[in-house]
Image (cartoon, rainbow, N blue to C red; front, side, top):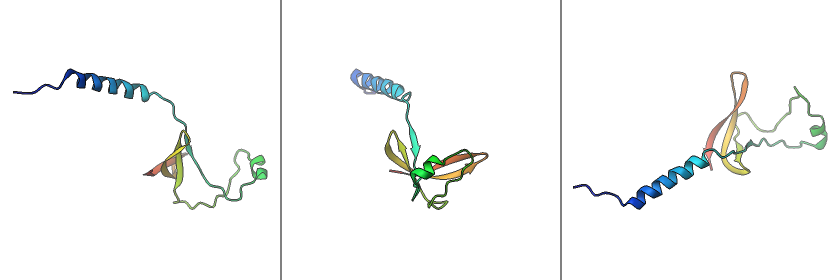
Length: 92
């Protein structure tokens, strides 16, 4: 004979599923920070399309990845086809 779970457990599961469904639609801002040692206001003013900015980071160094201002992962940059992509390497 099978025991049935109380009806309140089913209601809690339904409420939890509804909450997650609503949360899945929230917008998030993802930021990948690239440290630029010695970057000055002069460099900022001189930014223009096609300008290359030299970084002190090596190709394989991980950079912080923030979601809504909080570091949640570490990532590395890579080129995919004609785009610059970010590969997550570790979660915080």
